[in-house]
Image (tube, rainbow, N blue to C red; front, side, top):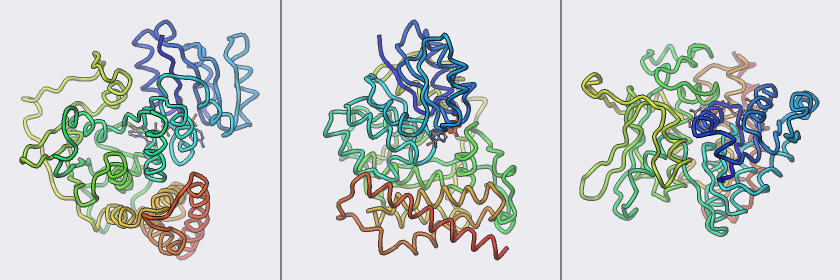
Length: 394
Ligand code: NDP
């Protein structure tokens, strides 16, 4: 029986993973080892009971008493805190889903790789902040990383049986997010609610707003560079409002392989779960005659400054990815709290990166996990200062 752990089980990706496990037989088909959540203790306990997990862990110590109470008599152990979540990655499991949101997902994924596990990676922040480290760790311990981000799963699938040396370019598709058709000058006034109205994908709050600002796509560009080991200039982004092509690979003979499907994360989660097989998945089938038209357009960098910043980060490497991601998370927190405007987020990130310039190192800098975590902390402090300064000016 295959053993499975899910980090971030109560989130959007986590829930869809649990859904696929339940449809495939749940506790009768899989041995569920660890399930982790953040604040949603009630849901965590519910799924841990249903899947008969060995242990359920919530991020917040304050939730432990409630978690214990909800699991009483179930045989599921309970624990809390970031340390307990990281330790859960040491428990033997054949397949580990990394679906915690943000930099908090880095350490558990890293520990799972150290044990040679197969890591289904939704937490793109891991590759953005510590790409070379993660890939080296995976290679050193015979671990495998399977991409779960729909774009990267699409590219991964388009590359099956292909020589990476024959790849000319990778074309990431982007929906453009909720505000893609707004006049440029109106974007500064966009509210959280308006940025949350994603046209195609139902996702967690943070990634949905990151889609509207294209910070999400910026992370994905960096993720592509790190995961597939391809040069930054070979990575393109194209707006594709229908979100039916999940990404494309262009080869040196001019052929383009595109991966199509309904915008449903269970495609890529299911592919990673069943890899290298394909199993039936409960996703909508495309009616191409009904769709009739697919459209594309070039992204406007004035509207999406995050895409320009991704190029800066890739050119620099070193700790630039860790600083970029942390500053972006802080900028998003301040936008969510109403302190800064939608277009101020990129300003916060750019100013924080400039302030940290001397500490970022470069491609040749020898970096360990502690350096990444230290830069994550430092960039949060700097970005917080910048964001508070901007909020004061408003
Ligand atoms: P959600 O916000 O829906 O869920 C995040 C999960 O992480 C929840 O289980 C949450 O717990 C938990 N969590 C939050 N903060 C912490 C913390 N500090 N420590 C431990 N656990 C924590 O996120 P998504 O599912 O949308 O995204 C997860 C990851 O997958 C992200 O990296 C995202 O970029 C990536 N991704 C998501 C896609 C999507 O469709 N949603 C698509 C592609 C990639 P709780 O809810 O209990 O508080």
